[in-house]
Length: 273
Image 1 (cartoon, rainbow, N blue to C red):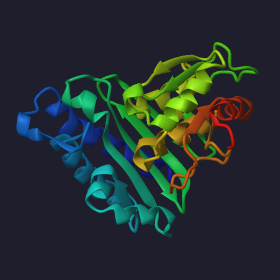
Image 2: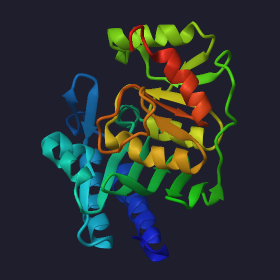
Image 3: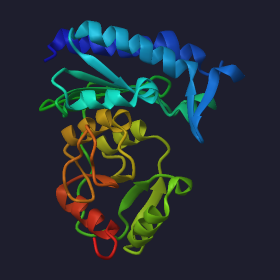
Image 4: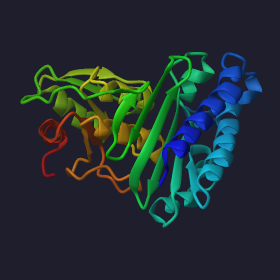
């Protein structure tokens, strides 16, 4: 759907959003530039302006395409229905890690993915202040700054497995029960901050597995394609592959192979499931 010039044009648009909108506002936000959409869910002028720029540029690169962006969906949730429609869809998180960005931490990224009828075709993960770009194309592999990357090896048991989880303050009582059961297997848990950077770590083999209890497409589309093109799998609690259009059985698991994913999902299921 995109030739080499189109892929290059998307990278240029993502880098432009970073250089013209996001980075100039880093560490320079006024109090009125930050709002709370919901408790603990921040949005800044950088999020909104970057999404507006990307919406204009991406739809110009691929005429007839539409955009499902985090901020646009917050204003109009019906836009999520576009993910199952016939038009090519750009899935955009203009600042993944707004909490970090607002606190002047460089641990944020810009996420863009392209899908058609729920099939992920290409993705871009730019961490402008950490200095890397991760990209993937369906069937074309995963790359960081142009170099191919590969997930970590799979495992045959969970003891001492490196598993990333969301922060405990985000857990529901059911998730608390699931993760407690997982802990009993002897995994080595740690907590990630934002999904975009974590998917890049998984794809490059620096970390092994991640568990996600929410499936907002803008948080995961770019990273899921990156991870799977690096050789990994992303499946729901029912073992089905992650569906960017929604309806996933949560939590879902990103793992280096199916066998490792099966071990983790089995440990997460509660009695009777």
